[in-house]
Image 1: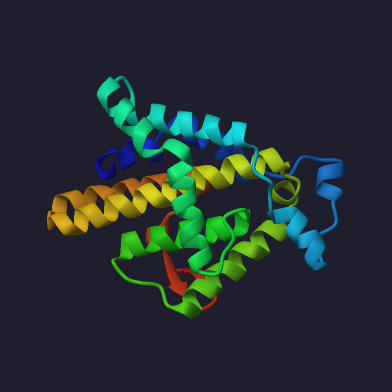
Image 2 (image 1 turned 90 degrees about the vertical axis):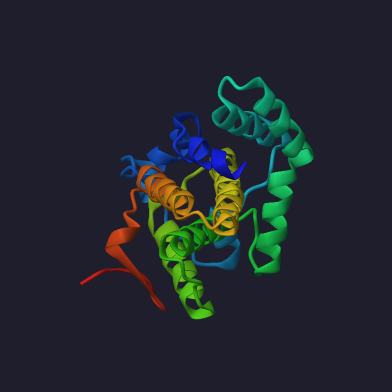
Length: 217
């Protein structure tokens, strides 16, 4: 599974639903939406209610992206991913760290944290993680196009992040256990490429601080 992480991270079918969310807000009512200020408004802008049928489509997309034409691998992944196993693992990890798997800002925070830890070989401190969370929250609440996402769009994006995080973590752990520098380098290259393609971030140009990510001087 870990070796197939690159197939998922670079798959157009996985990224197509997220790349456009970084586009400028369209003119009209979307751009005019007021920024949420109350807890209820903030929750409404960030949280989603899961539709099992959308989750099933995402699972099928991920399996197709990883397995390609390899029927045996597809069968193995069908078993491994059955009963929403990946989403349940992501939910467990998120809850253990005080996050909600149904909150898109929480999900993006963890994606950036895991990606930075993979690329840097370091572990983020609690203060640095809080800095990422506040930075991400500000971006989501301050960007009309992101605030205007539908429930379905939030679910699609969040669940793709869930697969990215879980599979990236497995790939990194397997590479570290193998003791193979080339394998770890490949995981890091895949992680960097995924971030660039998915959210337009070049982590090599950034440093992590207690205020979130800042450009290197």
